[in-house]
Image (tube, rainbow, N blue to C red; front, side, top):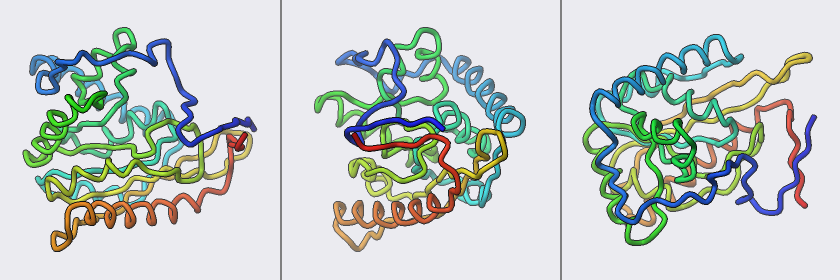
Length: 248
């Protein structure tokens, strides 16, 4: 068992040399490359996700049908951020070949080869200035209204094998309210296996629908409360700590 010491829930345990990479001020989220580039990268990602979920890791899915039953409307999925590779590939597997997008740190774009390719596969680097924020929000809401779906990790930082639920960024709950689309949550939990890495048990819950009778900010808070409560409930089913986190 490994032990990691954290000083704040904003500590990042998975970093790269490009951690301080900055988005250009005029970055265009509406230009993710040519259609053929998107098709190639998304097809490869779907193949990798199938291989990872069926052969690469011991994974059990619970209620995966919920996303497939969402129909053609757009939706947002919130997940706990505990698998550097799995958190990239599992949503592709669950998305059933629908157009998938994921909010990602701009640092990912600085990684050679993989970074530039990630935008073809649906990565949406989060804005780094107020000037960019408005354009970014309008773009995400437009995708949701067009029937695409968006994956968000509101804990923001990857903590490998963490078995709790860390505080969420409240701003992450703006999008289902602004687009008036349902939200779901995806919780990765861990089960003990003898002399092996834990089995992943992945729960899908929802839909959670914004209450249009409330003011927008209150809708966001209500949605966050519902999703966070459900994810805490699911996370409590983990029965092993492969990595221990201690506050320093």
